[in-house]
Image 1 (cartoon, rainbow, N blue to C red):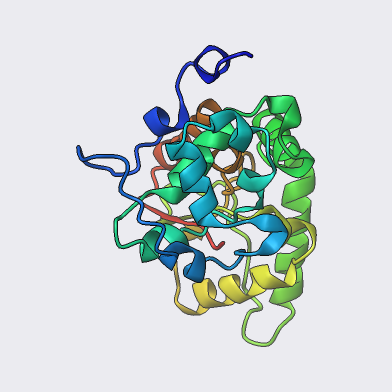
Image 2: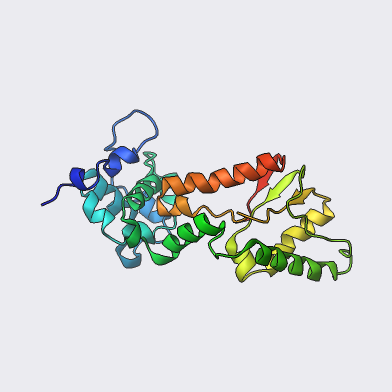
Length: 235
C-alpha cells in the first residue's frame, strides 16, 4: 500500500501544527467543546473531533480522500471554543491543499480558475463589471438626497478601497446600495477597482497557497498604484 509520506511529502500535522507555539501536538482531549460550537456537527457525519483524531492517528489519506474537509465553512468557531487552542481550521485547510485539484469541489475550483484568469469568479470582463455597478449607481442617484451620487472607479488618492463579493455584482445588486448610501452621507472618499475587483480569496478556501498569494497581491497592487490607505471588504 502506498504510504502517506510517499503520496503527500508533508503530512497535515507538519503543515498545520495544532498549536501556533512550540508545544506538543497531541493536545486534543476529545472534550467535544469544538463540536458543540460547530454549526455543522452531525451533518453528513461531520465532527471537528473526527478531523483532529484522523490527523493525530496519521490517517491523512482517509481525511484527504473524504468529503469532510469540504463540509467545513471555515468559520473558526471550533478552534475559538477549544480549551487547548488547537488550530482545527488550519488542519482542514491543510487537508484541502493536499487534495488533487481536479478533485476539489466544482464551485471552489472554478472560483480559483476564473479568479486567476479574469480577476473575479464570475469571469466578468471589466467593461461589463463597470456597466453593472454604474447602472446600480444611476438608480441610487434617482433617490431623493443622492442626485449627485457617482461611482468613483479607479480613483487615485482615495481613502478607501472598496472590494466586493461576487454575489453583490451577480445576484444581490441591491446590497451595494446600502454601503454606497453610507459612504455618500458620511462623505467618505472611496473607490472601486475596475479590474481584479473581487475580494473573495478563493485560494484561501481551496487550500491553494500560490493562488491565495496572487489574490492578496492584486489587492496590494491596487492600494499601491492608486495610493490608497485603507481597505474594506463587505463580506
